[in-house]
Amino acid sequence: MSKLILQDEIEADPMNAEFTKEGLKPIYWVDPRAKILIVGQAPGRKVQETGIMWNDASGDRLREWLGVDHDTFYNSGLFAVLPMDCYYPGKAKSGDKPPRKEFAEKWHPKLMAKMPNIQLIILIGSYAQRYYLHLAPKVRTTDVIKDFRHYLPKYLPIVHPSPRNNIWLKRNPWFEKEVIPRLQAEVKDIQKGVTPS
Image (tube, rainbow, N blue to C red):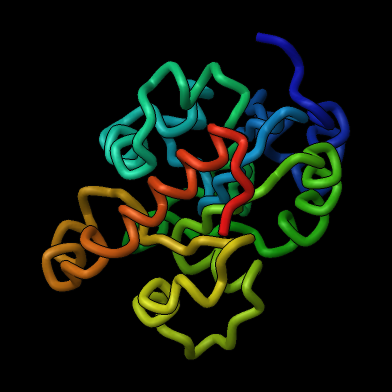
């Protein structure tokens, strides 16, 4: 596997010393050709071990929502993936620990600078949305996603495609009726070289 852009610098950063010492690699995917950036939370344990992002049930659903196949997602150069923290943060009492805030603050601007062609940033979940949309702590993720048109054409906030969110999806049928078709249209337009509206 070839070195990622800025990988050596990220691994040498003192904030990541414990991960580097354990032989863990930062998990992200920056491509100068990319036009669509997916910003999520942080890699899970499986992703940290395999190094393959979105290679699970959540990834299958995400690709379905995007309207692209496996090959387009991984090999076309259209997409980049930048988690809020590029290392698995460990287990909490309920689910995983949150991503370290300081990671995105330090490394996202440097990594974004390597992708001059980004036209759309898909923000998955509350951590990415709060950081990029500068939201107040009390703002509800559901309200942000419902108001997705307000953030276009640069950003499109969505819920995490995890099976854990099946209940949320059932309670919020507007998401699959309104947000997903718009997401697919934006992706298709960018694929065709049309400037997103």
